[in-house]
Image 1 (cartoon, rainbow, N blue to C red):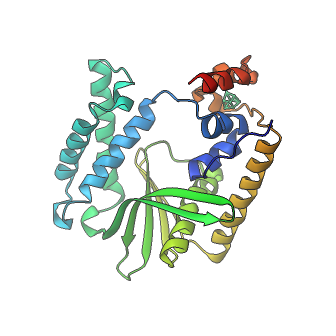
Image 2: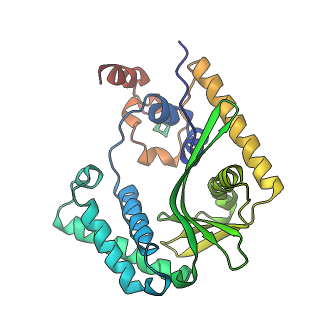
Length: 267
Ligand code: SF4
C-alpha cells in the first residue's frame, strides 16, 4: 500500500534519507517518537545561549555576557520535557553544563561577536519547489561590512573530515537557496561554526552550488515519492546505526518494521 508523502523536507531530513531510507521512513513518515539525546539537547541549549547573546547590543556581547546567557538558557530548559527526558543525575547534570560552557567559550575563538551585525536569529524559512516544500531554520543571518548577506550555522558535534566537508556544506547551501528564493538576494558567504574543535568551514554560494542544491533536492524528493508509492524504504546499515533510535524495528537488527506501524496505528 502506498505510504503518505512527508509534508516537507528539511536539510536534516534530506541527510537522513540519504543515510538510511528506512530510518527516514520511521522518522518523517511514521513519525515514531525519538528519545531525547544529550548531544541534541546540549546543542539546543548552546544555540539558545548564542541567540540570547545576539539580542544584546554589540558592545555587550562579551564572554561574561555569553555565560550569563547560558545560565538563562539553562533555567529556561530546566523544566523542558526534552531535558527532563534525559534523566540526568546531579553528576551528569554538572558534566552536561560544563560541556555546554566549553562550547560557548570556544565560540569566542571563532569570531568576535561585537563585530557581527545580525539581521535575523533563528529564522524560519519555507519555499515551494513544485510539489515539494523546503523548510529550514537559519541560526543567524548577518550583514557583512559591504552589506552582503552571511548565513551562519552553529554545530555542536564534531567537524567532518575533509572528504565529507562538501556534503556537510550541502545543508548550508540549502539555507543559501532558501534565502535567495525568499529575500531575492544570494548570501555572499555561508559558514558552519563547529564549536567543539573549534573550526569554521566557509563557502561562497555560486550559480553552480545553488543549481546543484535545487537539482539534488528535487532528485531526493522524486526518490522519496517513489519509495512512498512502492512502500520501499530499505535499511542501510552503517556506523550511524549505533545512534539510531529505531533499531528495535529494523530488519538489519532482527526487528520488524510492521511493529512500528502498529505502534503508530494505536497511538
Ligand atoms: S538501525 Fe541502521 S539500518 Fe536500521 S533503520 Fe537505523 S540507521 Fe537504518
